[in-house]
Structure formats: C-alpha cells, structure tokens
Image (cartoon, rainbow, N blue to C red; front, side):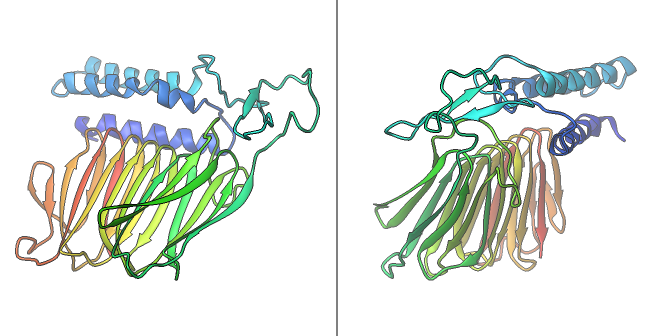
Length: 334
C-alpha cells in the first residue's frame, strides 16, 4: 500500500470494525463522543498533511499512533455526558401534560417513584403522515431533519406525500407551507433525546418509509446525523438532492436528469453511494479530504473534477458535488 493511502485506509478499516463490533455487542461506546470529539479527525488530518511527504519510519509510526489514539479516545472514553449508552443503562420516561420529557437513569433500581405514570422502559409508536395530491403543485420541496433513523423511499403514491414511521424515541412532525411557486413540506424529528441504533428489523429503531407523487418536480433536502438512508428517486423528476449528514450510510438513485439536476452531499464519516443512468451526462466535483472516491466510467478532467464522455454537448445534465472528512464516496452507472 502506498503511504498516501495508509491514513484513509486505516481510518475506514477502524470505522468499519468499530461499527461491526458494536453491532455484535463486543464493544459499547458512547455515540455522544463522536459529536463532542469530532476535532480528533481534524488532528488526524492535520498530522497526515504535515507529514504527507515524509516517508521515514518514524513519520509513519506517528501517523498510526495518532489514528489509533484518536479512535481509542472516541470508542472508549467516558466523559460523563448527561446521556450515556452503556450496558445496563435504562431509559426512563416522565409523563407530564406536554408529553415532551424523556429523562434517563443509570440503572439503579432504588428509584423513589415506581408508578407506571413516572417510568417506562421504552417510548415507541407507529404513525402515518400524508399530504393529498394537488394538481396545482408543480414544484415540491421535501425537507427531512432527524438522525438515528432508517429512511426508505422506493415506491410512489397517489398522494403528494405519505410516510409510515416507527418511533422508538422522539416523534415526527409534518408541516407544509408555500414559498413563492414551491410547495414546501417539512418532515422533522422532534424531542430527539438520547442515542439509539437503527435498522429495518430492529424494534428499538426509528424507521420512516416515505412515498412521493411522480407529477411534481422535486427538491429533496436531508439534514441528518447518524442515519441509514436509501432513496430510489429514479421514477421522479428531480431538481435537486442535498444531503448534510454525519456518520451513516447514504444511498441515492436518480433517473434521467432535467435540464439541470444538482446533487450536493456533505458528510462526516459515511458510506455514500450515488447511482446515475448509464447514458446520463454527469459532472462530479469532489472536495473529499481524506475520503476514498470510486467513480467508475468517468473521465478525470482536473484535480477533483470528473465527467462522462460528451458532457459539454449534452442537453440535460447531472451535477454532483461531494465533500466530506473521512468517507467512502461512490458514483455508479446503472
């Protein structure tokens, strides 16, 4: 392995190993550490840049030491945050008039209030949301906000928007309003407290299954932290997709572009896959730092820029701009 690939390769391996070990129960770490200790990744990136041209053994050892030390701090550090996720930790729910409070306990059974109204092991439920179709809506914008959730979109609906959710913690709020000629829908996770995992088959996970109408032109904006997202937008007329994410997995599939279809992705430590039609004209601009990039079937134009053959003369085009600290970015043709 070349030295310039050592740091990003090690980081991706350690991230993948950490998630696998956590999912199988071999290690338990505080997810809050990622948000509080994110400058560790800046230190890792800075050390790698400072010694980028130094091939000496001691420089390589220093890089490896900083990476391993940084990940050990994130995985095993206990800094007494208010919300923890350690074995034996238990969620308590205090019920009051506004139904908004979720409090946490350290697992001690000597609680002064053991009544059903003062304590619950879980807060969960299923909800349905819908917005009827209106033929006057030509451009629709969907804004999604909320992490620690599995988002799925792979089917259409006769409504303008519909969603079925399973909520383990927090709850979704759906609102609409008009902005000039754009009909805006906000699908937001409220009362997001505590930290928890995700997965379609996990009863302790937040899952949202979304369907959209194929008639309008769509603008989709996603602001999510630790998220597993799989959106098949190939049946829709897509103006833009914007993803702002943290650590997670994001997969987006788009169909034939409009005159201009824009896809902007900014993530932290994530696995990002974008699927585009094999005959679509597509331009990629990558500002991906220590990330790994795989752009099969694209011609490299300059540093960080790639295009399909015949892009300049194409009538309809897809523009992809990706940026991230330590992620795995892939753009595939289908």
